[in-house]
Amino acid sequence: MVTGEGGYDAARGERNLLERLRARIPGFAGFADRELRREVDKLQREEVAAAVRRVKGRLRETARDHADAGRLGPLDRFGRLDARLDGLAESIRFADYGASGLFAPDKIGEPELERLYRYDLSLLDDVDDLARLAGDVPGPGGDPPEPALDALLARVREVERKWGERETVIADVVRAAG
Image (cartoon, rainbow, N blue to C red; front, side, top):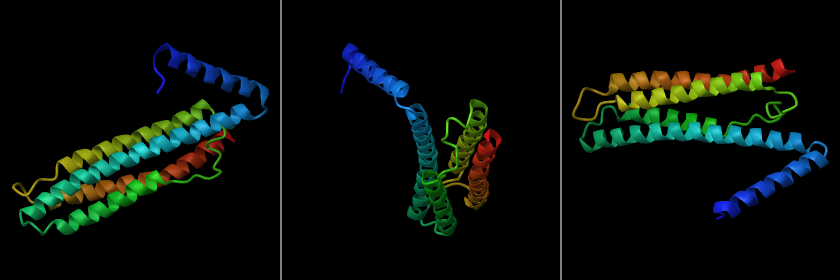
């Protein structure tokens, strides 16, 4: 690990090398920008998927509490939600946009990217809402959990639908930049 002034100078030196490559190799700048966009999209999807998995983990703890207390009735609903959350997390994490044009910096400008980023931020808000709803599911000593589980399942379906529409948003962004 490089730290201190030496680390800063090393990073600056590497940046200067990249800038020199950009200036001397035709197409390198576009390639680097395209790869940066791919990496940002991947990191973003991984974070959203991780947030969904945290919701799933919280729900599993509540389900385990119910099972330990002998309240087996709602476990089927917990199981359905677990499967839906798992599917949602995986579809987000492994989304593939292929040659959608999203990563072409010469085609996609800041206004188009801003539209997509706004959409993605709303997805993060939706996942925060899932976490809140999962926190509202009562434990075995409280009210019956079924109404809260049903509300959470309905919201998961909405987020699944919205995630599915992200591909359309990307296509619209690419078409608008066209």
